[in-house]
Length: 370
Image (cartoon, rainbow, N blue to C red):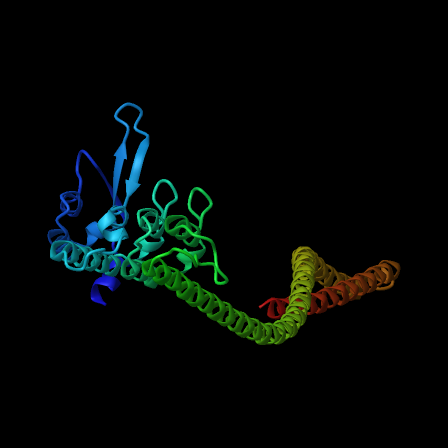
């Protein structure tokens, strides 16, 4: 039903009996069952509203009831109509049954909600039965909450116990009084027996469905566990492969870093060699310049000696015999000078060769550096 579906989303709230009671409670309190039914149909949220009465000094709860509890506490609801010819009583009873039907339709959880004393609506109803229980109302409550037949009240009594106390008599084979009891009591016991059967079947069905669900979940979990193990194995293989690849990559990186370090070292050594070669080249150039200067000086000296030789030769032509010893001495000096000049020229050529070699070496080193 639409109203039943709506009740599952209605929030349960409380109101104070003196300060802000609901309109539905007012209709019930005035015993206007038809007005209460109309109010419950138009305002289903009031069907799940608890009416609370508190002590005016310490605020403790005196009683706490749903509209359903209040109805079940009424004798007109708990007891069947004794005189079917009493039209007013029959109408009132039917109106209360219709009201309970609306209340249970709007808030079926009310049948399983105990009051502040731990009493279910069924407990309250049977406590007011006075030996003439209303089977139709009992069936309404049991249809909404069959498990109520096994729930005990604050005195430890099940609905069956309360009904047996209300109806009196001794228990028969099926647990119901069998002597001096009314047909209404017997019908109420049969309703409780049917509710117990329904509750047992529901419990068995729920147990079987739960077992099937658990088995299905276990089977699914087993399959998922197997699949998970395969996934874990595959992931471990991928992890091992990844670790291997990372180790190879790390090894390559170490080799690259080592090569870079070695190349930097070699580069530093080559730069040092280039610097040394540059310094040697500067020294060689200075030595070459000194040798060139000495060579020029020797050439000047050689030219001077040649002039002397020519002059001596001219003089010797005049006095060869007298100056033969001087000429020999001069020739010796000229030979010595020539030898020294040749030696200097040889050294100079050697220096030039070294300089060309150093220049070539420097050029090769610069090309390697580039």
